[in-house]
Length: 133
Image (cartoon, rainbow, N blue to C red; front, side, top):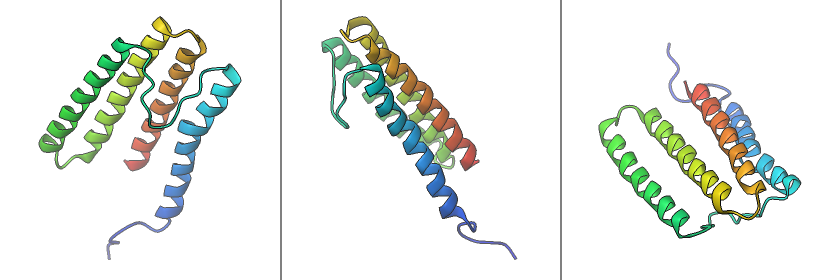
């Protein structure tokens, strides 16, 4: 007889995975930001360095929205593709932010921390995708 619904132990495993994700994406960068002397960022706010950064960031966001809508229609049976596209655009957006911080920011620690954040997010996404498979 087959098992329908969630597997036994799913919620325990899910909570452990989510705790690791929060630790990698929020706690480590916050600790490193303080340790490296990088500027503090507000959550869910727009911290643009200049007009070039603002225009580039909004261009990437619009491309991301259209890509997600198109992939949602084309790959409706494969939701994992949407996760991978979201991760790809997150890395691209953080990469652009790193470039702008390296090029225009007064505090040189900011771009180094953003590079660390890119690597932590990449490791987190790969781990979650492997867990989902």
